[in-house]
Amino acid sequence: MNKLSALLVTLALVACKVDQNNENLTVASGKWERDKPEKIYLYKAINGELKEIASSSLSDDSVFCFALKPATGGFYHIGPGKFLHDRYTFYLKPGDRLNVTVNDTSYVLNGNNSAENRELTKWHDFVQPVEWKAVYFDKAKSNSTYVDFFPLLEEKTKVLGDYPKNVTANEAFNSAFEEYRNFNFADLAIHYIYTPRSAHPEGEDFPEYYRKLDLAALSRTTAIMNYPQGTDVLERIIFNNLRMENVAVTDPVEAIMNNIPNIVNDTLKGEFAAKFLSQKRTYAGLLDVEEKYGKYLVTDKQRNMVRERKLALNETKDGNPATDFKFPDKDGKPVALSDFKGKLVYIDIWATWCGPCKQELPHLKKLEAEYHGNNNIVFLSVSTDASKDYQKWKDFLAKEDLKGVQLFGGDDSRQGIIQPYKVSGIPRFVLVGKDGRIVAADAPRPSSSEIRALLKANL
View 1: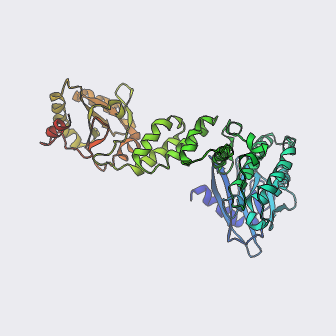
View 2: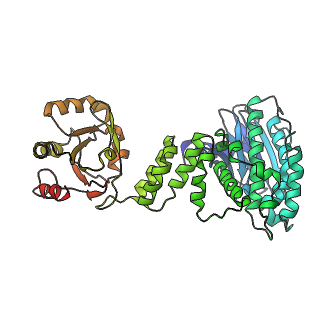
View 3: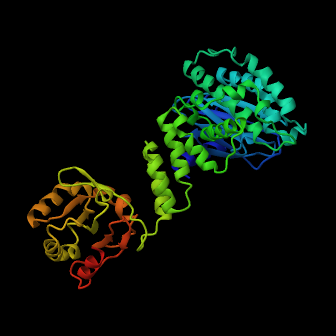
């Protein structure tokens, strides 16, 4: 748990006892009378994922309480779990007071609450019949099927377009609330389709709402990333669109990946690409799909997700594909290992401060000289010196007249080459074959009597 979460939890424990006139605190409290869980959680959607902000134990009379200091207003979710049937949505801004009672079927506000939460409650009252059938089907015990649900949905969609937009004096809330309503209604409608029923609709049974529920309308911006599991909603819409068209889905991952071009926003495209690349079970399979979909990764978070999956799948051992890396050369030009595919690459992982590394340099220079003019082999050195020592590295190259391809890893060395190649000490030499696969994960050093025979055998 990070320091912020720990602080919020501490505050939550005393929130019900704080001075309600303390305008520095936002207090969310109430009673959870349904099923009597041990704890109630405060969540917030961050980058499409529901994150726990704080937790509150229930008192003997089922009271929970949170206190926090949000910098700005935003949607929060309160309940015993992350699933749609476990939480309700509220809007909290600095100084707000929320008080709510959750009963067996819904919730009610108590006392004075903000205009934003009064509007959220009106919306919830509007969609609650849809929610009850879609989400609480096990509690409703109504044996609902699409035969009774679709007419209810159509009844609501007839007035959905006329729902008031500027509902409060808070323009930021009004704008976010309009997006929330669209996402929430779509979430409930599509959630119904993927819950256990005694009868299921065929393509022609779906009302017009589902046919107009396309990816473009919901993926023009990253707004759905502020909705809990927003990308999962888009995913279910993709599958339902295929279902309405009677398209058989044999590979769900492939079906999603094939629909990435239909998502409008580039960041959302990257979220889908990162998610499904990260689900690949083999390193070779990941590399194969990355070649086609890696172009969609646009954020550091997305690239790191895929990189971590690579590290988990790829064993740095002979015969396995070599993990690619890219670092600048002495002129600042980015150079990647993959730039030399088709050539034998002898990699030296070293640093200017490393005594044993420097002891190998005369032998490395002699080895390079023997293969001078041979275009089938590349001698590539990666310095793991700290970024602050960049000039020291350049001066060292000039002083020692080092040849070959000289790259500077700097502070990116750990993620770029040390972790992927499981380097526990330097110097470390790696030999990569013309096909991009590892010939020797821990290759003989230039001073070794074995290195020339190994190079000759692979040339």
